[in-house]
Structure formats: C-alpha cells, structure tokens
Image 1 (cartoon, rainbow, N blue to C red):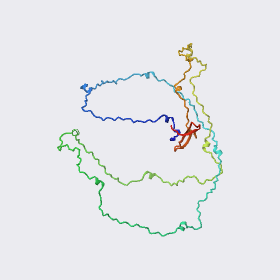
Image 2: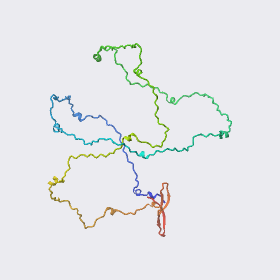
Image 3: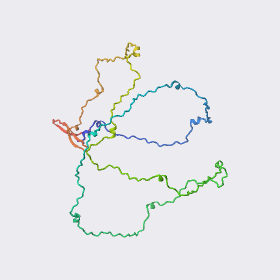
Image 4: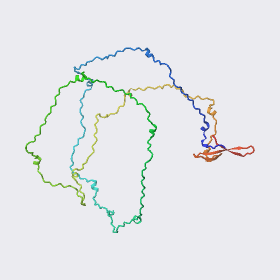
Amino acid sequence: MGRPRCLCEICTCGSDYLPYSIVKRHLQVQEEYKPKTGDIELGTTYRKDYNAHKIEPMTLVRPLERKHTTGGKLDTIPTYQDDYRSWEVQRREATKAVHIYHPPTEKFGNSTTFQDDFVPRELNPRQSFKPPCVAKISNVPFDGATSHCTSYIAHQLEPKFIRPKEEYKPSNQPFVDLTTHRNDFKGLPGELAKSCKPEIAKVGSNARFNGVTEFQDRFQPWLVSLPEVRKTREYVPPSGSIDFNSTSHLDYTKHEISPAFPIRPVSNRRRTNAPFQGSTTTKEDFKAWGTCRQEIIKKQQEIPKPMGKFYDLTTFKSHYIPHQITPTRSFKPVHAIALNSGPFQDETMYHTEYTPKKPEICPANYPSPRGYVYVNTDSHGHKFFRQCIPEFSESESNPILKEIAVVS
C-alpha cells in the first residue's frame, strides 16, 4: 500500500535535485615551529659599503641689507587721476508737486451709521425662576432611632487568651566556636617578604657654607626708610548751640486744605427717553472735505519720439550677396536588401531537441479529484489522497482498481 503523501508537495525541484552525501573536508594540521640553531648574521650591504664622512655645520647665508631712501618727495600723477577727471554735473531739480493746505470753511455735520440706526430702548430684566436657597425647618421632633440601635444586641465578651511566657533555659553543653575558616586555614609558618625599596641616605654636611651665591652677589641689601605715620587730628566740637531751623521751616506757610473727594461714577443711573446728543466739538469743527485722487507723475521723456517712417535696412541686408548652393554628394551606401530565392532555414536546436510534454495539473486543486481517494487531513490543513490505477486481467475485460500511494 505505501505511506500517503500530500500532493501539493510534489514539484520539479524535489524530483530533479536529489540529496548527495557530503564528505567532510580534511584539515591539515599545522606543524610546530622549531627555531633554527646557530647565530644570525646581521651584516648588510649598507653597513659594508657605506663610509662615514665628517660633516661640518652649515653656515647661514644672509642677504645684504638694502636701505630705501625716504627723504625725497614723490611728485607724480597716477593714470587713474590723469585719465578719469571730474566733470561738472548739474543737480536735477525736483519734480514734486507742491500742495498747500487750505482749511475748510464749512462745519462738519455728517452723522454716523450708529447714530442713524441705533435707537435707545429700556431694558426689562427677566424674572428669575430659581428657587430661593433657604433651608426649610421642620416642626416634627428629630427621630434618631437607626437600624443599628434597634437591631444590635450587646453580647458579653469572653476573657482574652494570654499565652504564658516561656522561661529561658541555658544549655548544659559547652559552646563550639570552631568555624570553617579556623578549621581549614591553620596558618602555615613562613618568612616575611623582603622590601626592595632602596634605603634613603641623606647626602649632606653639617658644616657651614662659606661660598657666595648668585642671589647674594646680585641682590644687595638696600637702606629702606620706614613709612611716615600721619597722626589724625582730634575732634573738637563747636562752641555754642545748634540752630535746627531751615529755610523750608522758616518760609513755608501751612494752609488748611480739605481732603479731595474721589470722582466716581454714580451707580444708580436714571434712564431718560430723550434722544442722545452725540455732537462734539470735533464733529462740529472738523468737517469732511472732498478729496480728489492725485494723478500719476510721469517722467518727461528726454529723447523725442521719431516722427517719420522706420527705415529697417541693416548692414547685413545691404552688404549680403546670396549665392547658389550646390549640395554635397553623399557617399553613404544604399540600404538595399538582397533577396534570395532559396528556402529559409528556420531549424534551431530548440526545434530539433525539444520534446513536447503534456502539462499536468495538480489534482489537489480540485475539490474531489478524479482517480484519487481521500484519506485524511493533517494539523496544518494538508489533504492526503491515494491514486487508483485500473489493471485489466486476461480472462476478464473489467478493470481492477488498485490503490497506490502517491510518491514523488
């Protein structure tokens, strides 16, 4: 019968490329390095052929000093000052129009759109339907009976259990204070490490130094005079009494002034039906006067426009002489296809060696493939089928169905 296999796993890659046994590559073991015996000859051709020469220090070759004379006066004219000379340029007059302000003679009496459209009206405040925030006091006495007071039954508590305190009983055995450190590390006897530090030997002499140093030779003691201390004079208070009167105390006259009253707007304003008088001194004195748009100031053309007909004859048109052009001969070969009367040989290696094969469609694409029997479906969703191949016997003409497992 054989093991069933999924039909969707059969492909040309799985049938053409078969696995081969891979042999591991033999690695060559590197030989151990053994140094050669004997001395190394360090002589070179440079050491053999090179002769040392004595070299003297190089002397500095400085150029001779050139002294430039600066006593004479330079009286020359540069090319820029000689070629580019100043020209007398007249200042162009300003073309700005002169406007003289003329104050208006009539009063400004135009009213604004706010004054024309706005009509003062009295405001009627809305009646508030908000309930007053006042606590309502009840005449019934307060009933303080709760479910806890009525349902709670007081029970007598049992005495609290107190655990007796255990007395300390010391052990009769001696205390073992041997640790693992004391047991394992028993302190082997050994010599102390010697110090390799050199001894500090003081090199000196107790005798007095009788020589002369550079400091004693160059820096001689100088006679320095002490700074003169200036004595401060003792304070002597002035004789007589002190007059504390000033010019402000003597000349200032005190006046009785009433305190200034704060100028505040009246909170309770009275509403009147009279029309609002919006005329002010600014409206009466400053009237709107007509303005006209200023014309564009165009610059006058310095070059006058030509009046006659434009003569468009150029030097090119007047001097140019047309010549007859002879085209150059082309030496390019003619692109003509030579026709052959023989038959066209269209045989290729693909035509001669190609063997047509019938394209096979995977039966797993059909919901119920013909010629296959459904077996089961695995956990990944792959369906497994068995192929049924008919075989004909010699005595009978009826086919016999044989189940064969699909193997790639």
